[in-house]
Amino acid sequence: MDSNTIPVMEPDRQYYFMNKCKELVLDLKAKKNRPLTYCVTTFGCQMNAHDSEKLKGILDELGYVEIDDENADFVVYNTCTVRENANKKLYGHLGHLKNLKKKNPDMIICLCGCMMQEKHVVETIKSKYKFVDIVFGTHNIYKLAELINIYFNQNSQIIEVLDKSEKTVEELPQKRKYKFKSGVNIMYGCNNFCSYCIVPYVRGREKSRRPEEILKEINLLVSQGVKEVMLLGQNVNSYGKIYDYTDGKMDLQEEKLMSFPDLLREVCKVDGLERVRFMTSHPKDLSDELIKVMAEEPKICNHLHLPFQSGSTDILAKMNRRYTKEQYLSLVDKIRNAIPDISLTTDIIVGFPGETEEDFLDTLDVVEKVKYDQAFTFIYSKRTGTPAAVMENQVPEDVVKDRFQRLLTRVNAISNSRIKRYEGQIKDVLVEELNHQDNNLVTGRTKESITVHFPGDSSLIGETIAVNLKECKGFYFLGERTS
Ligand code: 5AD
Ligand code: SF4
Image (cartoon, rainbow, N blue to C red):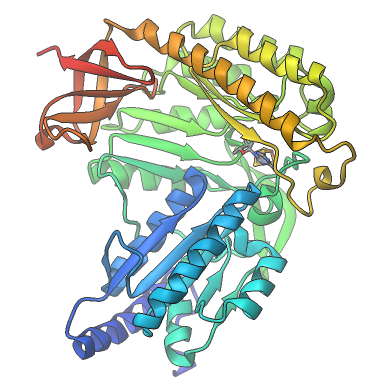
């Protein structure tokens, strides 16, 4: 490789490597006399799902063809480490891949994402999973083509995991699952250090994208047919700070950009965009201004995901959440007063160290009082390196399981009765796909994020249709077009 010809600046550098890889993929295709395939498996949150769309965009560009089967020429696992069981799952999958690779020795296995940011994981892969070819973390996914290029030249295990983001590379290809809706990163990382959470360690410090970059991307998406965007960040309510990088090091001089409510107003001005969602909101940073924008802007979906994690003020303090049970409840009141019919969803953790029966009853109390449309419930999972992992009084497994079941029973009953209130109402449904079980039905979502199935065909995909929510079937509706 003549290093003089390799561009230093991004994204030119990555396009250079994409072109190099394209030639190598073409040669391989000719040798095998068949297309080369890839399969990307994603674990975890929406952020990871969106990262996977970027990885797929690059692999498509290189000439690989996507398939839904791990028996592919290029296999990617985009990993999650937020809870321990996600880690266990990955090692299980790797055993399976080892067997597949025996049959197709040219198979390239690539691991990336949050779990790779943990040193002990990378050590395990180096020593026990030598058949894994390429490993990278959360800070350099944009470099996929460059890393593949190195791999093609060296044919030995390539590992590049960085401690922090050196740069944000814009304008690389993306392959969206849906033509009409898309995630858009507005910020990366998290500064909150909730004591149970590994995210700040694996995703690094908070860094906002510039509003002009975000708006440019959304305008482009809309010109390609996108009607709905989901603005993504670990804590979108603290959007607005950017850290510049000098000589690859973080310059601590932070530059203030725009506030999140102002960004929302700008996003809503984009012509042709119909729906705006965002995720996730930390209650401590949710401003009155945000509530006002949500109430005023018709494009902003009538839905807020507001994790409370625990209803006990003592546990919240140990979790480093920086709000009390009462503050959370009065925030919910304020939101409901301004936007009476808003759909609220949440995340709850059961069995945090030191959680007593009384603490748990406080969690149940919040659930009863708020009446969430949907609640995602998690059993506390000890993550090495977080402050909570070394806290005393870890709760015995049988006690946690019992509490978890009791919680689940209540949240399910409440969301069932909440969703029923929409029965008989007419709502706009953005059609996403043909129903998997019945091809005479299509499936879509309302602005409240309720799933609706109704008679229709594939010509409706991507269209917004007025639908009568005729029959509530637990967590979803069967509906009928109004015209
Ligand atoms: N154990 C259990 N749940 C966790 N979450 C984050 N860290 C942990 C952990 N260690 C949950 C929180 C968060 C959601 C994305 O995952 O509820 O909001
Ligand atoms: Fe984790 Fe808390 Fe940051 Fe959310 S806000 S990613 S729970 S540290």
